[in-house]
Length: 475
Image (cartoon, rainbow, N blue to C red):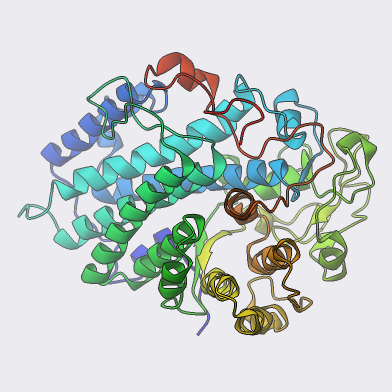
């Protein structure tokens, strides 16, 4: 059976998990203390507003804390998808902000307040809330006043989200640091970690999340942890282990982050910024014909347009903030209606899936020299509309033995189920780092392939002294 599960809905589907007993005052105080410690020890001193540490009733229960962790990650994920897609070939800028233009042109200044507010702070906020939840819940193991099933859930959710956030940090940034400058921080790092070290950090948490989920009977969460583990193993070039983990994921598994159509603050921002819902269109897909965007083109523009995933001429209702930019409408988080359909506001973003696991298994087979098996796995997913999340009949792959060409085809295969989720950014950066295969668009004036640590962190954290180890261009 094919099913869709968000983190929150999967928790509530087992044993009526929404009936969670209130946490006693002492446990709430612990959560508050941990939040306060994180907000004062991570360099970015304003990540957690003060009002969240003053009134214990604001946290209320582990149930509320679990929901908050999910919400924090969900709000960070669509920013990851937008900005990661803008740095590579999935989007071109349809707006005018200089801070965003730097990303599109691959020439980023670390003193970029747009990236601080839109990308860096939300991701670290999601990381802090996940770490706090896991730490607080672990302290309640064996507490007779607590429902231990709820405690188990909170531990798994905290570890799973904490692991996923670290995957995003490894993929996005040239380096990253947690804590620093204050030994009271929940996680203290005296110096930044490289992307590989951060991915190893993520793997540790994801393995713990899987083990705890399996022992507590949360099968969906265990599968989500395995998909993310396989992704981390691929980054670290441990392809055989990635294939082994990926093979254990249900082929029909879908794990999504959910958004809301009732509150603009919780809209799917990939949809909102590409459709002009609640704001003017500022992101669109490049067709390679716009000199204002350096002739940047999405690598598979024609195939995606032919399949109905892109509308090349959506009409005058879809006008960009920058009038020089022609809008080419993505059609997976909206259907091109005028006005935009409310379903787009609440459109889910796929975070992990059996589809992704299968493509990782296929890539691992390719890397061991078994190109026939790799093509067989991939084409079973691409050519059958019922077998990929986008529900389309994509062109099959045909491998040549040329690594650069074949990795580009594997990248296309991933996109058949992960387009505009942020996944392509991680893939492109991984094959550049590990294989020397550069799939980044080459028409822009800059050559950045990652995001720098922002100036706000540099100014407030004495554990880090430069935005990237190598300096610009950020790599």
